[in-house]
Length: 290
Image 1 (tube, rainbow, N blue to C red):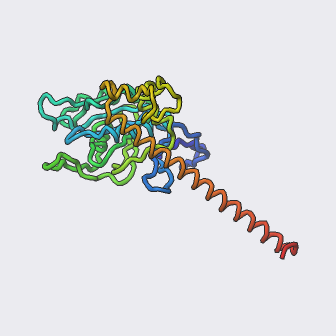
Image 2 (cartoon, rainbow, N blue to C red):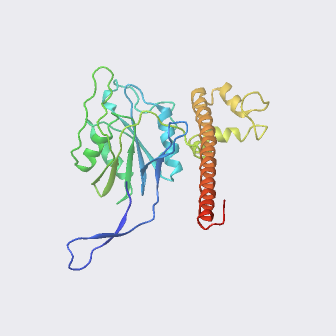
Image 3 (tube, rainbow, N blue to C red):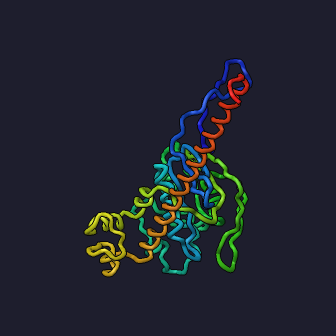
């Protein structure tokens, strides 16, 4: 979804035809959560990613970080939209203390009942640009799309017991409003880590900077002397949970990269075998083979 096409509107004709597809930019895809799965395309020609994460009952910082890495992989700015802020207790902060907000183009606490944040969300999208909304089921993506564009998508009510919304959107949809294009996507239950370490490092620049001060360039931050990361953990300068999320993403990334290589090699072997069979069949057809 999101491709731009060239339309041939011939004079005097009532029917226009597509004569070409423009080159894609801002191609957004989600790593597969399956062991040997392939990445799942989300949208093309995206200018910004709207990460919609509810703050009640509790925001998942890990999920936010994984979506941020996906956006970075596509070279797209990320807008963090913290939804359901009206469900917080008075005085309770809308932004999780453990969240590093430096990588976002904008951070907007928002509630469908207190829509003051809508203008800030619109301002974070380039004029005539496209934003793709990502998040778990019931985060409020379709409600936000309706409010931004006037669309009439079906939305689910919030459960009284845990404040969670219901899964309603089952397919991607493209909507226009406020001079922007909004792509609403179905909610995701699990977000896999990207196979590209550079995109993960971009989400944790503080840890990467600390690692650059370690005595050894290949420090694993486990037992080596002169480890700046372990020193920061001891001194309280680095949150242990943030460091563990970083390590977990790197482990998944390394596994994913190895799996991708295995899939590529398997496909190359299959292609080579098929080409060999084809050549042998052609030779037999010409009477030159056995």
